[in-house]
Amino acid sequence: FKNLVMAAPALGNKSNEASTQVKGTTLKLSTEYGDIRLKLLPDHAPKTCAYISDAVQKGFYSNASFYRSDFVIQCGLHGSGVKPPGNLSANETDLHKKMSNTRGTAAIAHWDVPDCGNTEFFINLKTNAHLDSVYGGYCVFARVEV
Image (tube, rainbow, N blue to C red; front, side, top):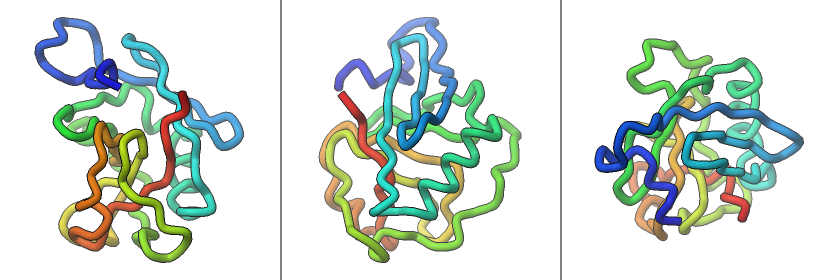
């Protein structure tokens, strides 16, 4: 998983931009560092999976960048000037089958208000169990396929 820390400044001048596509329930992020495949988990977060899939199909993640690389790598429209396609109306952390923020899972990022998520998401580089409950929890909607 160490190769997924692609937004770290020390990695040189390679682009950290990602392109995405959805095939069935798999989201593919293509970067200059390789592909990342996220298996969507609609049993855990159906509205979140639908929202992310719709944003991908509409091209919202074209040339998006991973801009954080500490305990997670984060991607979305942050700093792009592109307005997200609305917000998620509900944080699904406790609404369906709950899944913990373990290493290799992807979750929706949000401010300290739990029902304001949008296109920002992150992939956990390590188990971050505290993210299951802090600020209402960060809803896991996918996991990295290896």
